Image 1 (cartoon, rainbow, N blue to C red):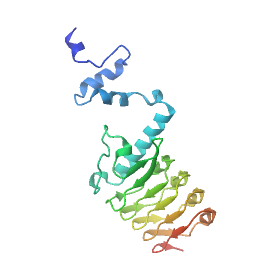
Image 2 (image 1 turned 90 degrees about the vertical axis):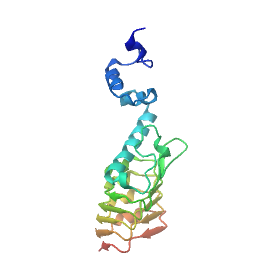
Image 3 (image 1 turned 60 degrees about the horizontal axis):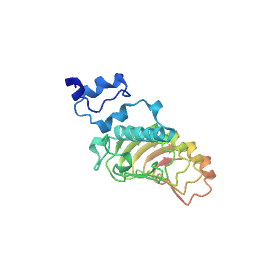
Image 4 (image 1 turned 180 degrees about the vertical axis):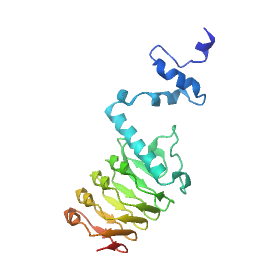
Length: 203
């Protein structure tokens, strides 16, 4: 075999030539990582959805100063499944259903991409330094049961889209800088058991 062939043991006729320069230009890239270079159109709908969830977590990491979190074990490491990242729990189908980053030195804003985590049941961000608004996209988390964002520096109004969270049992937004009126849509939360809005600037 030729020298070039011996340097590319993992290549085969089915490998797309356009990806070969990238693989050879990154000596640290292992064969197990090469599938991640495949275009998203080649993924099954299930794997496509999981990739989108991983992307949403990466946005969260970047938007909240992830490099300075108290614990960011596994985060952003390509070889670590996002279900094994610190604070992340997945359901039996491999979809993210819990983010527990309580008192973990998150500093920044909650990205709108949080709305892509459609299987989320528990979103626990309290005791951090999150600022800016609660994104309206949070209303897309139709399976959400517990939303605990208290003890941060969140500002702006409570998004009316929270009224779309029909499974929500706990809404805890106290000790922030939220303002405006309490949206009437909260009255639509028929299974709500715990509502904490104190220590804000609400009308």
